[in-house]
Length: 526
Ligand code: F6P
Image (cartoon, helix red, strand yellow):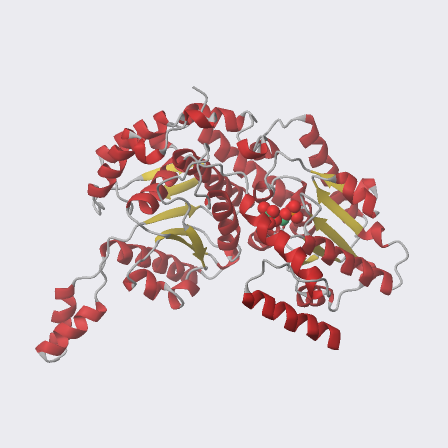
């Protein structure tokens, strides 16, 4: 049986193994007296605050077996065409392999030579990075998280088509000292091409004769970049078999190296490669991505948690939530299985979050006492890179406290008695204690990094990539396509024409029709 032949995949709800798994999860306890730790690539994944029992583990093994986990894992890591709807491999692991294929080694070498040359000649004080989605979040995350290595150049980001974004990026920049790096797998993304045009215009308006001498392109469509005028020596390639949201490991990392050093992108790749080796070899019970995936499936498809909150207790990880939002939601936001049938169970959760302790003062009220709640991934680093030991202890104490309170809740009786002890009237104490009570029994995972190094960051991101792959396998969906993003883009280009005065499409709803007319008039009045 080949796991990627759609016909072989039974519809999940009909699988006896799925039924057994859901039944086991529904009765599995939260154990406050048991430790469930998995070590991987220097990280510790603590799943003790997730439901767990011998029955859930047994049922999970059977479920993964019937879904062909071992074959599927092999196929992914071997570069087989696991992305069925686009008939491509999803071989991001090859980008960080210790012995990569020639093409990958060549592009890594070219990136290294380009950065070392720029450093040696002290070229480019500032870099403006233009790209969106998978061609943006990874670069922001890595640069921000690993800035401790010392910034070599100022890196500014432009993603949105909103002119305020590029206006802000070029503000105060010296056009002659600025390198434009444009990243786009498809080299067709409207926002990115429009922002590139604006940036090139900024250079020429400043008197730069050959603006494309100051442009680097990173893309899976090198011919399109060359056609635009980017010199071949400044075009860096990645390939169709790399998903945009899985592309940080490729030449997409070049602006990170320009900003904070080559050792950062090489460290990130090394950490991810270590997680790949763990994923490839570890048994199910000790396999961190698999265990994290199973906890997520239990929370989403059985226990009914519609969302996953990412609570990274490190201010340098402010871009982790948006990075994982794209990675997780663009991969798992699917309701049709590989055979084209409705999946029949809830799939990818909504992913959101904010660094701790900011999140505590923003939405933890909802996490603790809201009707829905969410599963939470807490992430913390044992060691900080600043000198203030006490502040770090306070940060970690808050992380552990929030996690335990979600799990254990608070006792109504203890609260009521405390209020009575303060002299409150019995009825009032009873009433108020109800408002203050935490129900508990809210699941979370704690992921512990020794320190926030490029290596640990790489391992963390690869952990999530493989978690997502395992969840997609169980749900029977393709995590590597994103057909759902196309319709809106197509509609936008049509509406843009209509704002320019082209006749409106007869299919518009009345409200859309109304606003197009008004906005088109606004443009004419200008
Ligand atoms: O619209 C979604 C998407 O296609 C993402 O998958 C991708 O990361 C992003 O847009 C940018 O695409 P590109 O790198 O081709 O410009």
